Length: 154
Image (cartoon, rainbow, N blue to C red):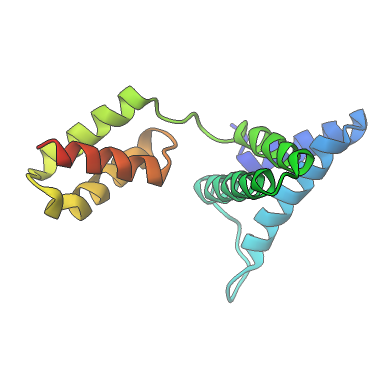
């Protein structure tokens, strides 16, 4: 099985051969972010696939936020480019949880922690985040909202 960084590098080679400037530039930026993270800290180390996925998720988030800022400033061409880059990078991430899966995850976390009010939000979030890490990608904001909504309904 190939790692995410190997896939990124292979796709970069393919994009360069195909003269696909958009893919080439986006992949170079992402690979650069991964390489920077590998060299950060006191000693350089090779990142695990999970760490690479975390970096990719952060890159997607940065681009989505930039796209929103550009859209608010009426720079639609730049916003579209940032959105295209985010969509392109998301191909390398695991699929997001569906709303039904998210609700089931939150219900399971509430049941396992015995939460009964909003005071238990931190405990439920910790359990739900740990459970989500093993089954797919979930947005922390969406998870927090789902937990808050479920606890508010108790």
